[in-house]
Length: 83
Image (cartoon, rainbow, N blue to C red; front, side):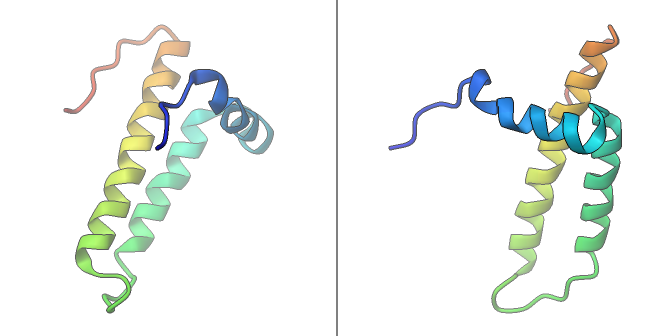
């Protein structure tokens, strides 16, 4: 059974963003957009169906949305999730 993730357990992710992107969340979200774009060129196969591509893109976009939420919060900008 997997327990809920605590904020302090995400510290390695924050360290990665700081180290690789200089703490610039907007830069990271641009790379996530590029990854989603590239998914359109992956052919459908038995091991990677259209549904698989849809689920992966959904996960990337959800992560991007949360990163943008943090980015806005850091700058005092109002952010509304796209539920």
